Length: 96
Image 1 (cartoon, rainbow, N blue to C red):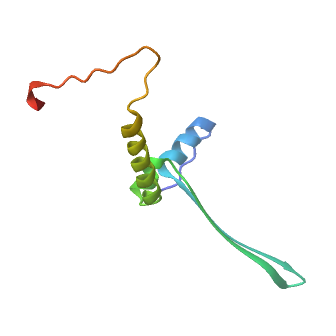
Image 2 (cartoon, rainbow, N blue to C red):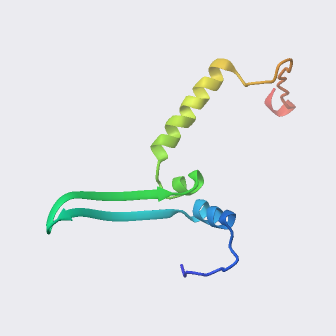
């Protein structure tokens, strides 16, 4: 991957690129006084769209849990419809 520079990029272009490709930040911070380290922080953050995260194996467990929960809730209550609307299931001859 080669870096490119586009001087006319907008914030929307940047956000689209970050969500599509992803962004990872690794930082090691050490706070010291008079040369004596007092506090150390190791930070790793990833920012990307859910599709990109799953593609690289990040947050897969969380995604599976959320999808399973949503499916269980949908089975309990059925689909959410506006007031006065009805849902009809039409099966083709192939599935009858």
